[in-house]
Image (tube, rainbow, N blue to C red; front, side, top):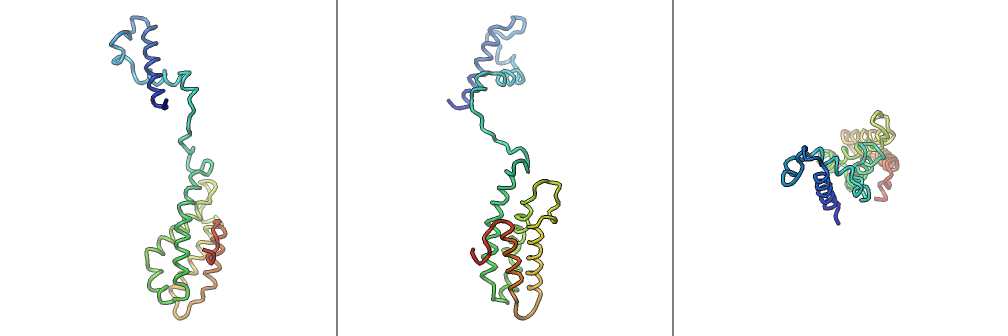
Length: 182
């Protein structure tokens, strides 16, 4: 028997028994039952039902944004894929200086990678009082982002060693494989 059916049967049984034993002055007898009983009485009757105690209950709420890390885990899972995708795209333009400067840094891919990297770092907060910029993962992301944006503004050949190193540090901090392993 499904839970909703069990609840409906419980309501009907309790309403019928309440009307059978209620004093006539309450007017709960016969066909007037459905129009006389209010929602509050029905809910109270259902919640106090011994049948409901015996039914298994599934927990549907996480208890808040940071309770037990339930929300944070899903945020980490959401942003992991976007950061991995951005890391792979960046590796595909590494060594192609003009393509990097003209296309990647001005693309939606970079904007998505930039947002996902910051949000993934921010997902490691333990409470809402902690400032995102004080998190090690966010600090490492911002250092990587600054190094990459500096390269995009420069001219001539690009030295990829610093951004690669900073990206690998960030990826290790957030628990992802380093860029060359992706």
